[in-house]
Amino acid sequence: MVRSLAVILIPVVVISVLFTRNVQHPPVRVVDWTPVLAAARQQSPYAVLAPTAVPQGWRPTVATWTKRGASVGGGAGSSANAWQLGFLTDRDVFVAINQRDADTQTMVATQTRNGVPDGESAVNGAVWQRVASPDDRTHALVSTSPQVTTVVSGDLGYEVLDSYAATLSSD
Image (cartoon, rainbow, N blue to C red; front, side, top):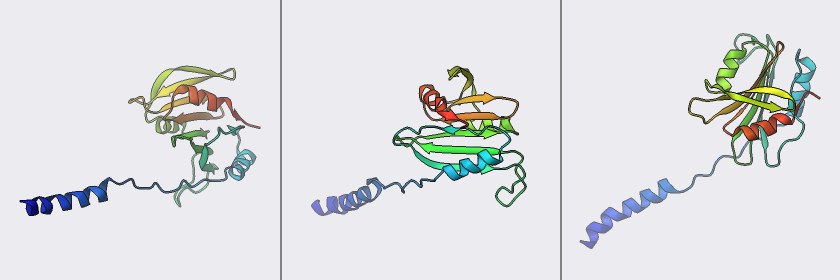
């Protein structure tokens, strides 16, 4: 009986150890966003926004500037001037600012996960439209002008997004 129990328990223990241990996450690839920002500000027809101060512990992971007409992924040229800057917070939650001067409805739908209006935020005297994803996980602030649409989004509360949006500047 002890042998039978050992024959059953040993493989169960081995399998449990192999499949329940914590797997290390790959290291976060941090990018230097300042040269991309400089290029975007030089080439953009609209005011490119970026934070004047990044909260402690936030790591930049995405910085892209695509000029209208530039080849995207070896395919057709971009239909818009597009800026994206993304950070992982100190809690490993992704927060991004996206700006685009064409196809803005598609960008808003993508960044908000097909979100719906959820009120307004006043940030530095400007009114931003709040948008929440259908499952209320992703929140976004959307600002639209004739020149550009700006989306600040993340799986965070509006308070954090409001604070981040307050740091954005075109200087």
